[in-house]
Length: 76
Image 1 (cartoon, rainbow, N blue to C red):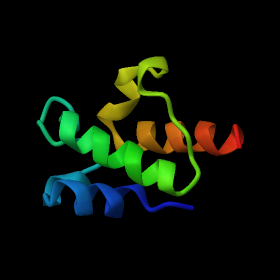
Image 2 (cartoon, helix red, strand yellow):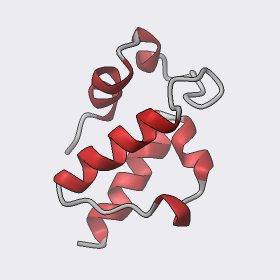
Image 3 (cartoon, helix red, strand yellow):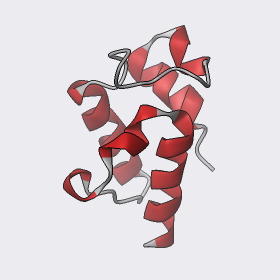
């Protein structure tokens, strides 16, 4: 399983990703560049997520991103 918090830390280089209550989009941590980095990493791991087909609200939290990854893994 992918450690989403650690992955986001590597992408965003900001300790706030470790706060379970932080809104990643509202805080600016999950900007368009970070989304591209996230989707590219997941694609390299064989997890395909279509950015135009997801609920963007799932990108607001670590738990939401974990849900996206789980759904992407289930489609393999």
